[in-house]
Length: 231
Image 1 (cartoon, rainbow, N blue to C red):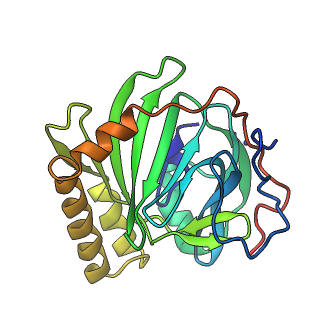
Image 2 (cartoon, rainbow, N blue to C red):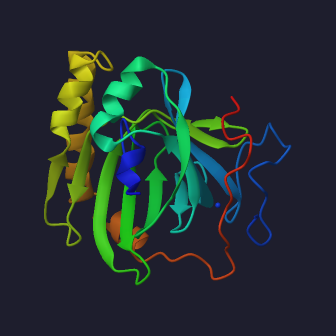
Image 3 (cartoon, rainbow, N blue to C red):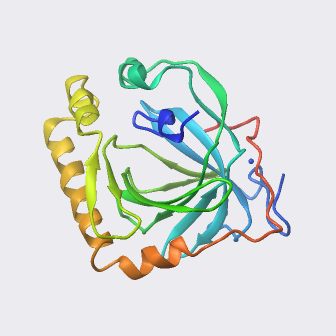
């Protein structure tokens, strides 16, 4: 399944020395590199997708998560073509999928309504570029982090020379379905454009550093916990 199909917006054992994502330390403030956590996309106050990830950084500067090929995750039991209509109902069934084809590093700055995805092909780690994924600022949960996807994307070329918006048609459908107001959609569009422009100008050094990152060999695949829907 393509990672984008987890949306409406889109598209897993403990690491050596790390804490499991089922840690009883519910008041944890920060996770340690190598810890396994759960990244969840919410919609209508329900879990839309739950993706096991590994902490790369959890600091006052940013949160970075690694999504590895082979990870099993939960997502809506519907096609990409019908995902917005299903989300608008507020009711859906979920099924298990396997994350394939790509390595992802998702990086979020504190309070910013977007994450930047660094993407490589699998298994050869060929860098294919970045994506700006607008979403609500990350909210911590006992299992990891929760957010709500904002449908639109900006795709950034691997050479950092240009970017382009993606899924503007889906954002328009989301407005028609009442998932966003016209004003909210316009704010999403403005913020996505702002961040994408900064990615090819003032943030270039950060993006190039992220593209050079690789996970430690000792890291193993996180597992989707049985309580992935717990709120």
